[in-house]
Length: 269
Image (cartoon, rainbow, N blue to C red; front, top):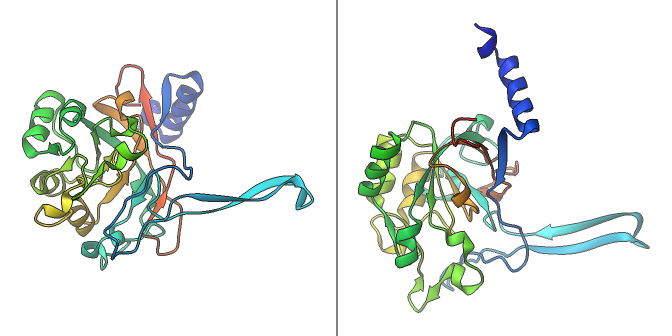
């Protein structure tokens, strides 16, 4: 093993590059607050809880030297991680909860497919196999065990425009079943991430199977990231994603802080 490839040397170089700014850290996370939208299901189903925070003390009679808060939210509130156990197709898989997923799965490379132009013209824009293969013709084949992130710039929306609810439910972009099968079965991706409230299109219930990103990804033991932010600041390839959920016992998902490591030239960190 040469000194250049020695693990200790590599880690030292990473630390120096982070300190010098040669490798930048980009926050892909929205701020958790009570106003951030959560997915809305038909009224006969249980609903996802918004983020709530309650002050316990603030350097006062309740605690003279400290300030802290209690908070409550769903596992799937804000920028969050989906584990395989979240969906019926992944319920019987091994290591399918956030506390049992191998920790090395939380750090990995990302491919960013820019669908922002299409999504700006069509709220129901679809990521298709043709779009994926066209992206690969320019950037190379998606490597096995990579995160694939669908950039739509949906994260720039606020309030009602984010969920984009109509009489027939939400309208937002997402992948077709064929696209998800290509990514999972032929490319062997680690997981799929979006800027919208879910990994599926808002009208994803009309596909076969319904909500194909959830059904196919989690049935294959893969992961989801939702409500991502700042995907427009990432290169098409070369970013390294750190996405570690809270270690909730038998948790189906978790809010988390998603960080991307990138270099100025867009190459590998």
